[in-house]
Length: 242
Image (spheres, rainbow, N blue to C red):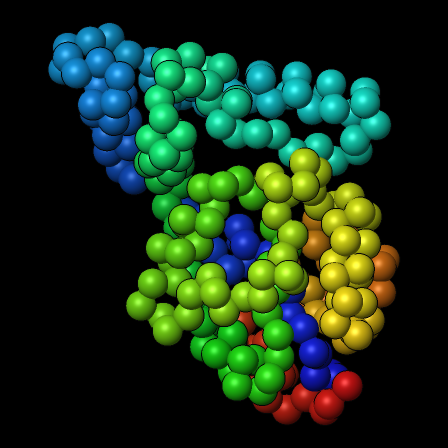
């Protein structure tokens, strides 16, 4: 393995391990709804499952419209989706909307930093390797990543701001070839080519195959793939220079 100049990390399933929701998610959801919108503890409210079903229908329709317009791998605006599922959300100030959406997602899943990820990224930094991010994500993802990195000695600032792709910012996402063409352009601004960058991801379809198609080196973070974060760290420590 040749040592990369840049490592691009996927987020969900790669940097962040996605685990089941908290045990009392529905009760916490009802409390969140009442505190945010109603203020009455006995007010009848929509369930987490009902909101999820409504959002799924909205997203499906938005994807259909976007594909009809020529966007192969569209991304939705989650604030707009949730505001259609819960119309009262639109009346909140932007900061309160963001807080609500973040709190809602913490009831849909539990997250933790993948074992070995922080140690590997620290080692990469010490070796002078730049870090970037490439993720299908929403604005709340940034807060989820911040929370997971807290206490590790790393932060989101460890990742180069010019070497990031966020689907919610660009309006489309992986596996669209445009994602890795976007990264190729950003690399070129630094004098790098795709072969000098390593894309780390957990999915063949979204991460590995489209990255390889654009000339990137890849690391499939899977048991049946290249190995976990600890194995990647060992490879980096023994890698020759590009």
